Structure formats: structure tokens, C-alpha cells
Image 1 (cartoon, rainbow, N blue to C red):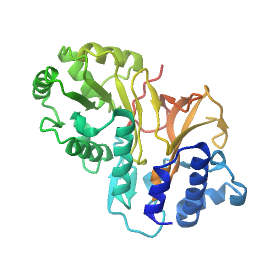
Image 2 (tube, rainbow, N blue to C red):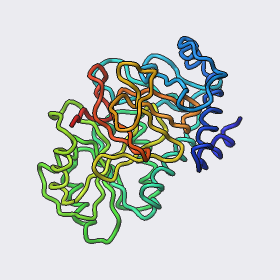
Image 3 (tube, rainbow, N blue to C red):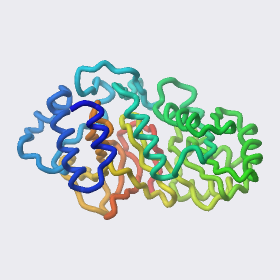
Image 4 (cartoon, helix red, strand yellow):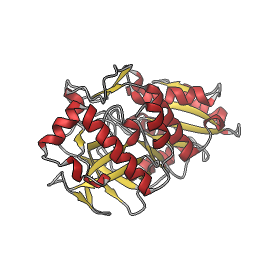
Length: 329
């Protein structure tokens, strides 16, 4: 099946049955055309013909993206996204065959949770990401800034005073404003300034990067709420190895688009999926990731709720600190 047909199916999923059907189709496609995923699945002694539901699909450990080229099919990648890991010499690499799939996914995700991008001024405080190349987060926000069409939209590195001046000017403009920010930089702002901007939407993207003491999410959000003068802090959950995002509009509870699913695995038996309200490892199904691997076992710990929303509780102790912070309540 070509990319157009996959896109048409993925971004128009409207039921559990259509999700299951598409997930199984993509699983079989990736098993046939992704040698790394096929070898991993075969070593589990999985009988492919017996897999009838997405709950039975094997999840590739995210660590494979550090040492293998995870591509489905024979197409050559058009670009490579690199992770923001700082604890070791090896970064995860996500080989992107068709960046238009990524663009469609993150644009639709944003629209689902926030509406038309052209209604917003997008500001981005992402110093650790802007200081390196090939960041999927920077790529996404650069596109959202462009799509906003707002002359006030833009990136900020360490020029905090300039950002604060911009926020003060925008406060009384009547415009909708979103500030995406890496966690440690947002904390810097909140601790140095006092901004009363109740209509500002602050979206923290995670990442303390070893620059500040790790704190629990509740404490972090309380500090940020006071510093920016807002009632709630939003969050974005994404990673280099995925092409889709989840968003939280407060309380750390994330929701997902229709082409994603979150499952929780037993930390002592990674092949076992456990029920709602139990803590375990986060497995992600991202059907937009069909040119790579759509079924990934992350190193994040979380809890799933009955409505499909989820909470991120931290990371496994042995995993790299990257992307989301080690904020365990």
C-alpha cells in the first residue's frame, strides 16, 4: 500500500475497529518490510497468523533506535532526527523517509487540541534544542511558527529579557499566545520574573538536562503558574522516535489523537500488557510512524486511564535522561 492510502486510513480513524484493522495492516507491512523489526519479532517466537488484535502486537524497545537504522521499506531517508540524550555518546536516530507524514501528523495533533494555528502567536523557548541540529521538536515548532503567519511568533535562546518584553506587549493585544518551553528554561523565567498573563498558554516540553534539581510535576507546575500568572500548565509528550504527540491541558493527564494508543506493560514481564490505573512501562502505538516502526516500548513509566488518557510518572532508572523529566510523584 502506498503512502497516500496509509495516510488516508490513519488520519481518518473513527472507531476502535478501524484502529485495530489499520494497526494490524501496518504491523504486517512492517513485519514484511522492516528487517530489524522482523528479526526482533521472530526471536520472540510470535506466530504472526495468530495476531488478531493490536494488544498482541510486539513492541520494539526504543533502545534499538540507538544502534540500528529502523526503516520500513527500501526508500532512502530524506533526513534524520537525533535525540537529545546527554548521558552517553550514542543518540537515538529516527530516519525519516517522508517528512510530509510528520508534518501532517503534528499539524493535525495541534489542531485537535488547540484549533486553527493561524489564530495563535507561537513563541518558543528551547535553548537546549536550538543549540543542536536535527531536533524533531524544533522542526515541528518552526513549522507551527510559519503556519501561524503571525509576525510576533518566533524562537528565543537565552534572551529572556527580550522574551519578557514580547510577552508584556502581547498581554493586552487580545491575541492568543502559546509559549512552548523546555522545562529548565521555563523555571529560569519563573524564578527571575513575575508575569501576570492569565490568558497565556504555557506548554512545557520536558527536559531538565541535568541543569536543575529534578522536582515532582506538581511542584514544577505550581512554580510555573506563579511565575507566569496562569492557572494551569500544559504539557507536550513526544519523542524523537515518534511522529505524533500527546498533549495535557493541566494536571499532567495526556490525551492522544485517534491514530495513537498508549498501553502499559508489566515492568517485570515486558511482554505482558496490564490493565488501567496500574503503573508500568509505556508502550506507544503511533500509526503515523509506518515508515519506521509504529509499535515502540519506551523507557517511560506511566499509568493508563479508562478513557485512553494517560499520566507520565517518570523514567526507568537505567534509561537516559532525555525528552521528559524524571519527575516522579
